[in-house]
Image (spheres, each protein chain N blue to C red):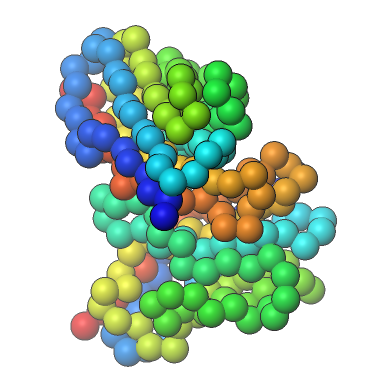
Length: 113
Length: 114
């Protein structure tokens, strides 16, 4: 069966420090991959999505970036965190068609201090 | 472009009462429609989905939703709410002609009174 792993679960980072969040999917190949952010009390904001290795689309300009070095690995990064980067980050994967929707990871709570 | 509106940001119901969460979408053809639930500090879990067939769909945890094309709605219902249903609920719409992208509503936070 397919599973999605996201880590770390929680992270406290100082302003100006780098960030690396990792997401991996097992049990499928060539998934579509997504990074979402939830600010406190807000809905889901799509940050990046990828339909293949090295293919990244950005939905919102910001100081975050994403990479897909392997088929089932999706990384969210920042060189210098801002206070406004605090939030709950969710990784998700989907198949080529939407019949099954997206499957979400358990999320990373990032607090920038 | 597709869009989703969840008109109710917060809803409070008593345990054992019925529940209906509203979802309205905007899309020209028959969309793919989903309801997800999110417990605090957790990821989103799929409750149910619709993309063809019977317009009344059954999901997990006793939830159901009805697709009404004439009203562009896909409301989520449960006949009797349990305290464990307290969570945030997201409606989403997508179509395979738009890069397989899902668009999520802003969410409805459900609180259950004992």
